[in-house]
Image (cartoon, rainbow, N blue to C red):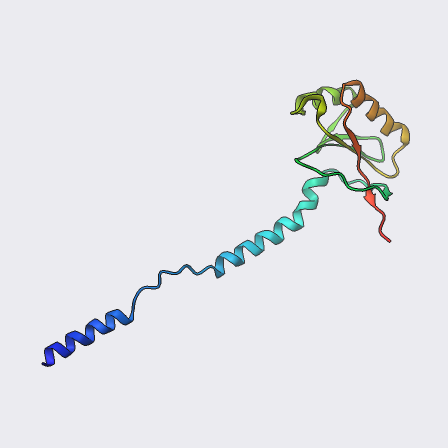
Length: 144
């Protein structure tokens, strides 16, 4: 009888300590929150590229379906395609090479608020001469 009691208690002990097959998601949530914070902080830097002071307007925001082609004009007249400095002569060739949808590709033009109007119009005319007609001017909203 003693043998059967010990065997029964061993079986109960093994049954009482079953393995936990549930996944602990607390570390996963912690990692995801850290990644979310990192992406939120760097998202603005990824979009803008070259640092310029944009003019402020009451214009509404256009919907963006994918990464736009961004041309930036600095205060001193320097022109950047995405993050790369280009000359006005090379601008059209590089735009044509990058444009995936051909001449229907949307191009965003970011001009510093203190840039001469003539410089912005010169870049716009080069883009238009190349056949691109879908040009948007980027501004910042007026904060009241």
